[in-house]
Amino acid sequence: MIKITENSLRDGHQSLIATRLRTQDMLEAAALFEAVGFYSVEVWGGATYDTCLRYLKEDPFERLAALKGVFKTTPLQMLLRGQNLVGYRHYADDVVREFIALSAEAGIDIFRVFDALNDARNLKTSIEAIKKQNKHVQGAICYTTSPVHTIASFVAYAKELVAMGCDSLAIKDMAGLLRPMEAFELIKALKAEVGVLISLHTHATAGFAFGAHLKACEAGVDILDLSNSAFAEGTSHPCTQSMVAALQGTPYDTLLDLSLMEEAAGILREKRSKYKRFESSYNQIDTRVLLNQIPGGMISNLAQQLKEQDALEQIDALLLEIPSVRQDFGYPPLVTPTSQIIGTQALLNILSKNRYEHLTKESKNLIKGLYGKTPAPICAMLQEKVLSEGEEIFRGRSADLLTDELLAAKEACKDFAKSPTDVISYAILPAVAKVFLQERNAGNLTPEPLTETSQSTTSKSQNHSNTQIPEVFEVCVNGKNYEVIFCGANHTEEMGQNQIQNMTLKIGNKTQNIVCNQALPSKLPASTPEPTTPVAPNFESSDPSGLIKSPMPGVVSKLCVSVGDCVQKGAMVAILEAMKMEHEILAPFDGVIKHIAVSMGDCVQKDSVLVVIENT
Image (cartoon, rainbow, N blue to C red; front, top):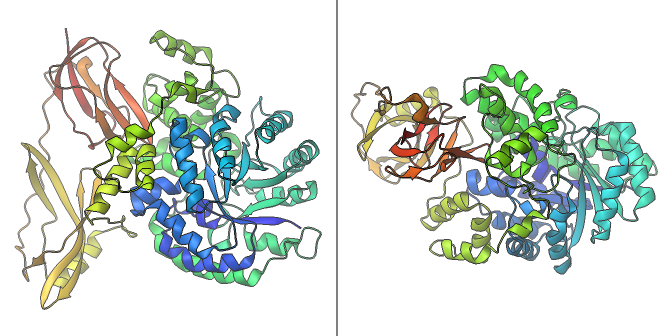
């Protein structure tokens, strides 16, 4: 009998609607899943933690509590990125232990833990911490193809994971590359060499995942990861109902109730219809993955980056560049965070005049060994580039370089963190968690809108309320002019007064949803000022070599200098966040900072001037 892990409440919607499914839209279907009898239901981890805080304005631990209240007998499962937890860098061991303890206490029964490089050293602390909580550890093997990835290498890694204490194993095929016959051979080899349950997790991106599952059954697989039809296929997983029906009456029969799954599918399809804004043209079968190995969610993110740069026509060039960058970096499997590192570096390469003209902070850290050992050596040119900047390459367990972080995090967030789960959120995602916690404390949590605002909806809203609001206006803050675009508003009528509940404003590339409780007069002035352009500093007289520009679209997450500072060549002047990765902006030569053109939190485009430096 084959066991099933249901994935629609985590990886299914992560793959198809950018992880945007809200907790309230899960609970009705979850009650039906509880009655089905699944081996487990995956509900947490991966991108859900970040998305809850950043976009949905939900506490991820409150989501877990709500789901645990529904699933009384079915084990809850999460995806844990080893030393990266649910973030994008390695965290100190004390943070790893605290997060796992809190997650276990909140209701996680099965921890599927993986390392993006298949470096078991990065799983040591996680496995030990999970075992200490008396929870099930499922060690995941990141499946990929390259000249250095073989069945023998995967089996050797599997043995290492079992020796470290893993209770079961998972083949994690995030890009859908595992072909049916290869699935048979790999499962057969694993079953012959290790004595634990084997789970198969693959995506339908390349079109043959269903066949891979069937051949895995023949080879002796124990558990299949599937997704309810409402969130199945394309860049998601094979369909649960289809597989259950296909196996009926065979030795692999799951003995699960299809009618309950179909009832849940009807509910989830209706819920999914609300999230059309987050559907992507890249979430269908795309056999280009066989060459570029890019997971579906990563493709849509890269396409959005190119769209913001008005360079979407370069998407094919990017898809060709990624395999080349992956080879240069030692053939890492493309899964968070290595997928972001390789994808962002490839994007920089095609947007720059010269390949590797700019290296992101994470690219440098990967070269320096701070993410672990890559499957193959990183190319000599990249190693030499990092060494020439005075950096060193580390060969040990990278977390050993980190000092404890939890106490410092507690101190930094003491003014707005109210619980241990607040503290751990801040320790993992400080900038995102700080905004969330401060908004929560002020009672101002507002999730991003489910629908795009448009001129037509704005007009309808204005006509309905008989309220006219200027569409474009100018705001001056600290002597700097900003163009603000009014995108739309929701109105209510209370006691004869027209009230705006919330309005959407766009400032540059940033859209803000503003909660309002102020009563308005029946009609606002109808005049609309002429659109204005923000006043920008004039850099025409500056030495072009001293204009430090953004290499790509992103958000200024940190400014490291002030006007008048003397800096040396290579000194960090700012940090830019793009695609959830940090990019260090460095001084091109020794000099004095003459002007800072941006503020923390500003959205910038490629070639936007960030800092002006004058040669000394």
